[in-house]
Structures are given as structure tokens and as C-alpha cells.
Length: 282
Image (cartoon, rainbow, N blue to C red):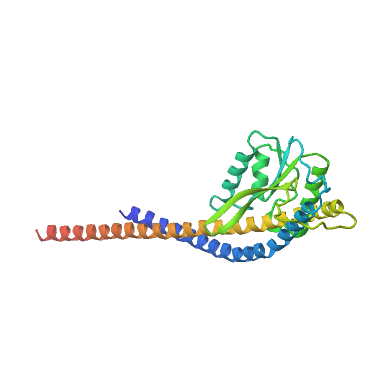
């Protein structure tokens, strides 16, 4: 009985230590989540304005053509995939990889992984990786997003791949993060209702459009990165909160078992003392 009590006590200490870690990780994730949400809000107007400008150029010029809009036979696709730098974030990483596998099944694809988990996933499975220069999402800067845009635009122009998609996780709430893919190239302008005035661009609409495309792709990549970072922190905060609550429930159960074991040990000692006293009197 005493050995059982010792085991329970050690287990209680172990759970308490784990709960302290999960509680601390929850607080860290909450702090990072607030900063990530702010970046999401600040990044949206930039790529929305670029997207609207590109659509205006494409829709307002009847003779407009661009290599970035021309659809061609799909021989290979490129996916820019954002995943986490660490685990302990619930289903954040696994949901992303499950979606990618479903979308790319039976297709010829290459990948530009962003984040340690994404790089590990595609490398271990022998998938074609365009570059491994962006292993940590937490260290990605705006200039890195422009570098990624330069790499993918160059590959697209050279015919290395015929479609470019970016895969990230949209942050809906702390409890809801949805992995999605967005096609970047060929660019599809948003339909515009009603009559549009013809706008003249210098040096020309095609030149202006082609110059904006890398900026647009860099902006989209940065926006997806912000959304994915917020989603990762939201998923980690929720996972750590659940882990903390489970640890608390486990402590309650272990405390109950410990008290029962302690009460049984006390009862047994009293019984032995009473039995010994009765025997000595006899």
C-alpha cells in the first residue's frame, strides 16, 4: 500500500510539471497569436490592392495579353507549402499535409516548402523540392517573400512548371483553422460587372502588368505566411489549453486515488494496533 502511495505521489509530481509546461506554452502562444493577428490585418490591404489593380488592367484592355495569364498544358505544378516550425499544435501540420496529398495525388508536382515541418515532410518522402532556403517560418521576412516570388516567376517563365499554387492555413478563430490552396499563376482576373473605361498605361498595359505580377505574388506569399503563423499559434494555444485541462483533471483523479490509498493505510495501521492491543490484554 505504501509503495502504491509512493507511485501515485510521483505521478502527481510528474503531471504537475507537465501542466506547468503546457500552461507556459499556452501563454506564449497567446502572446504570439495577438501579434500574428495584427500582421494579418495589416497585410490584407496590400495584396488586395495589387489584385484589384491587375484585374483592372486585364479587364480594361481588350487587346491585352501576358505570359502570366496564358493557360497552357499542365505538365507540372508548383506548390508553395506553409507548415509549422514545431509540433504540439494539434492537427495544424497534419491537416495541411493531408490536404496537399489529396490535391496532388496522381499529378506531377514540385514543392517549395516553408517551415521546418514542411521541409522534413517532403524531403523524407523523396518529393521534388525547388529550394530548401526557407526552413523556418518564424524567420521569414518581407525580402524573403520577394525572393520566393522571384524564384517561382523565373521558373514559370522558363517553363519549369505550368501552374503555381500557394498552400496555407486560413485563421478563422482559435478553434478553427482551415488549410486552403490558392492559384497564383496563371493569373485569373476577377470578373467586373458593367462597362469599364479603357485605361492607357505607360509604357504599356502588358509591361505594367508583368512588372506588378512579382509584387503581387510576393504580397500573396506574405499574406499567406501571416495567416498560417496566426493559425499555428491559435492551434497551439488550443492544444496547450486542452492539455492543461486534461492534466488538471488527471491531478484530481490522482489526488482522489492517493487520499483513498492513504486512508486505507491509516485504517490498516489502526486495525493492527487494535489487534495487537487486544492480543496483549489476552
